[in-house]
Amino acid sequence: MTGTAVADERRAELRPIARAVGRTFGTFAVDERTLPPDATAVLRLTDRTLAQTIESITDVPPHLDVVTQWRLAPPVPWLSPPLSIHGEVLARCTSYRMGSVRLSCNLSYVDLAQIDPTLGALLEAKQLNLGQLFVDPRIEKLDFEFGTTETAGEIDEVFRRCFPDELHEVYPYVWRRYQAAVGGVVTFLVIEALPVPVWGRLLGPETAMAVQEGTA
Image (cartoon, rainbow, N blue to C red; front, side):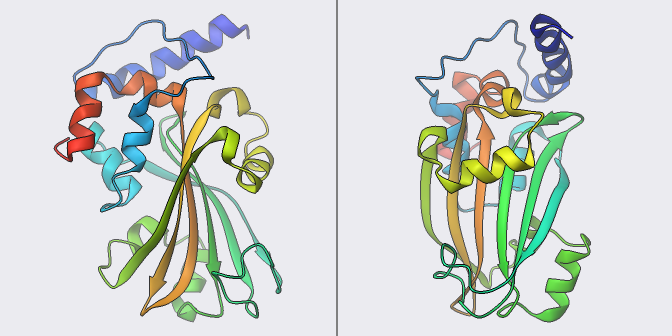
């Protein structure tokens, strides 16, 4: 399939999403040197989960796709701290999708020494996702950081392993990284990335402003 055919297919898949927010779009080109503010604005809504933010914009709940997951045996120096140095870590690569359109690329690292064993088992069995868990007000989100593809570091290396056949679709992206604590103990490290081309098509200036103001 040619690049033009792929682009046409992407646009066809995104039109229903655009209609959900009352917008249309045609050809869209991304200058990788300058990231539009729209996707960044979505990530900076830190008082809600990413799934809640996506649903507030599209009026449709996104589907969570568990791409892959694996365990890391202790110690894992680049995760400890904030995670404990002695426990196994469950690493999960997930994505929010609508149809075949990938709206996000997510990484989460769960400290199995700190989480309730039942919750850990449900996460590992793919019967629970962090978006469902993080609506609990007892879970506190801490130390938000934001960046772009160029500043992703080890994040980018993992994304390339998780999405080897979709790099042209998920690049460039903006990301946020934060910790989540249960009872004051950091139990999760989360990274969420939004592909700029997708969100550039989905969001227009008025929608982006509403997102920034929390009214979308």
